[in-house]
Image 1 (tube, rainbow, N blue to C red):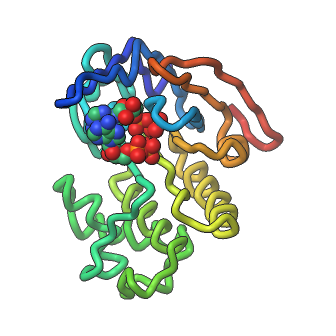
Image 2: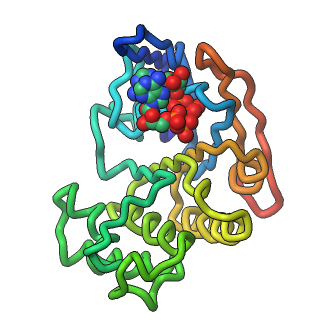
Length: 228
Ligand code: ADP
Ligand code: ADP
């Protein structure tokens, strides 16, 4: 059984300038523990599809299920991480990481423990009581990852999480992120325009075609050491 099931999802944006068919009948399955990347030209609908899976944008038609349950809004089951880290400058690293659980109304003492554990795992264990401005861009994204994982979601959605980083930092952090996510048994969808990142980080590369958003091709990639 697939952990993520996207069925015939279409999305139309309506603005004063007219309407845009961003997605047209997209279907996609992601298995438990599978890492999939979503690539395609700018404007082909990658971010739109990811926000629909995340439950923050309702599809015009079609359905999304996670673990067999329909996605009708944001949920602790689904972690969502963006290019911008949206850390609060007046909160410590630990308090930023806890925020993911706080906004979902989860038990705070337990969430703090889990946030500290995740920050250690993400290589930020020495910085729990620092503030974001004291950190590099790569470190800030590690905190954002910990915050994304603090609700213990089964599904993790990453929208260009490393695009704002320089290429060297990007390579280093990508490996670590994959390791953390695999060790936690997550199913992952990564949006990226970097084909190298897609190949290095994921088991399968899904190409969205330009206008109207449709899946063009899917390549299954298996690497030594990856079981799926
Ligand atoms: P990316 O290509 O990285 O997904 P974009 O630059 O396309 O980012 O979009 C950035 C933001 O602007 C997103 O929040 C998106 O929803 C919004 N956006 C993109 N295109 C339009 C548009 N035609 N009208 C209104 N908002 C848009
Ligand atoms: P990608 O992530 O692949 O760059 P997007 O999902 O951001 O693509 O955008 C898909 C299409 O929908 C583009 O034509 C974009 O301009 C349009 N779009 C995105 N967000 C909005 C929005 N909030 N309002 C209107 N049009 C949008």
